Amino acid sequence: MVSEMTVTIDGESLTIEDVVRVARHGEDVTLTDDARMKIEKSRQVIEAAIREGRTVYGVNTGFGDLANVSIAASDVADLQVNLIRSHSVGVGEPFPEEVVRGMMLLRANALAKGFSGVRLEVVETLLRMLNRGVTPVVPQQGSVGSSGDLAPLAHMVLVMIGEGEAFLEGKRMDGAEAMRRADIPLVVLQAKEGVALINGTQPMTAVGVLAIHDALRLVSDATVAGAMSLEALRGTRAAYDARIHAVRPHEGQVDAARALLSILADSEINRSHADCGKVQDAYSLRCFPQVLGASIDAIRYVSSVLEVEINAATDNPLVFPDDGTVVSGGNFHGQPVALAMDFLSIALSEIANIAERRINRLVDPKLSGLPPFLTRNSGLQSGMMIAQYTAASLVSENKVLAHPASVDSIPTSAEQEDHVSMGTIAARKARQILENVKNVVAIEYLCAAQGLDLLAPLRPSEALERAHALIRTVVPELTDDRPLYSDIVKIRQLMDCGEIVSAVESVTGALYEV
View 1 (cartoon, rainbow, N blue to C red):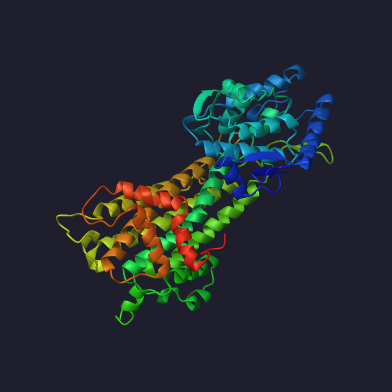
View 2: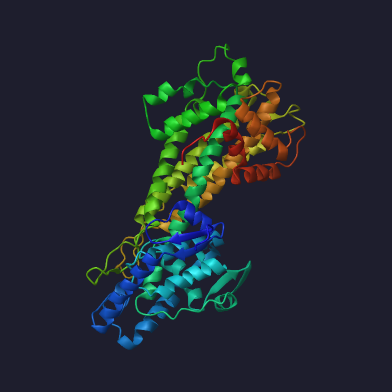
């Protein structure tokens, strides 16, 4: 009986949520019986090819530009070990453990499809490492995102053969020692297995999956923070009228306008300026559904790309057991993920760009009608002045990071691999941009909550009142200057565990269908 806390993989049906459960929350993983049979059938094809003396790329030939070099049968096993050692040339800080666990799961799932020709014990070793907490140390830099993420995956495989380094129970140690302590037998690589383990997009995809999971959640916080700013700035809800968005029915735009209206329903602040004569607000308020909605559509597109990639066979050559053939191709090329990650970077950057403009309006008395820099004693007190500086710094950094990595290509392997995706660079940049955007949204919450305090006794909508009250449980109203960095951290913590959105959704219902 498989525990409810176990993710079962078959190469076909893994979900983004499954990856998060294993990578981030440590759930166990097991193979289906059907996957076991598919793995064994594909291995039989490789063993038959060896017996028959057929020449198969990566089995009894060199790699890349050395594909025309034949390897003697007695050297086939050494070929695979040499491949792993020679390709372990990553540099820089290690990937977070959750990313490495994600790539291990995704590699196992790809092998479970039964097109890779590895032995069952190779896949089972990856799963044992996941289930017993052995996480290889994998440097973040060194992949060009074609021929697979060769360097990162090679570092992963080093530990499987008793080399490299790994984390176990929070300690960094020799890879062989980690495997020994976890009681996991080392793998002795055989024909095809080294190349099958490192030809793939799993590192860039693991980074992407964790980022897209968080991005989908961030959309709700960005919506709530924007709505809170609208209230603090005494903006109008008129621009969110469903009829406006129905005649330009981009799905994300329609959904964003609907979510904003549900958050802003029944607001005393809104009623207080119903007859003020103001016709329309600045774009950062009035066009919020259009801007946020476009990002939502982009994020959903990226999610759909990753849903395909996490269940794809991405190594080379591929084994087709139905007719016993082994065919070389290019499924390892990271272009689909690379383009998606660059798109995600742009979409996330725009969420921060428009949020920073609202932050700027909140702190500028000429635009907000509130006390300068959201403090009652400006001059002596600087209030939220520098919080806007930080937001400006983050969005400016994003503009640099959002330059697409996928438009670059440097040929490798003596021009044999003459176009590469740079997809892992794209994914890493998207992850950093995501962190920056989260902090910008946290700063908007900080400023908008202060704006609501300054409008008291007028009350915002019930949904926003609950969000505001929750923020005030960890961050008090700013009456005298204090270091604000810890306030931002505390709001980020509320965001990361979903508490602010949950408080709002207790009134509105789900803001978005995921």
